[in-house]
Image (cartoon, rainbow, N blue to C red; front, side, top):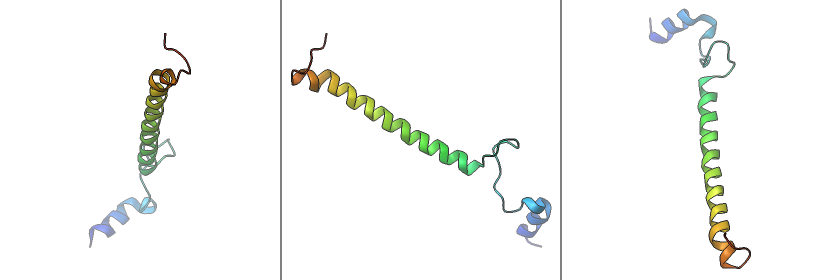
Length: 70
């Protein structure tokens, strides 16, 4: 008897379904990993936008005479 058959017999109707993070949370491990990937990408985009804003406020704006840094 192969390993897959043994696993199928032991798991029953749960065979082939993804595991959940916690039994009472309806989120699978793959969905959790995808959420972490998206939020990490979003955080890096946010960091880039803050850095660009800082460059505009501190360097570009005063250089063109739009405002003065006090």
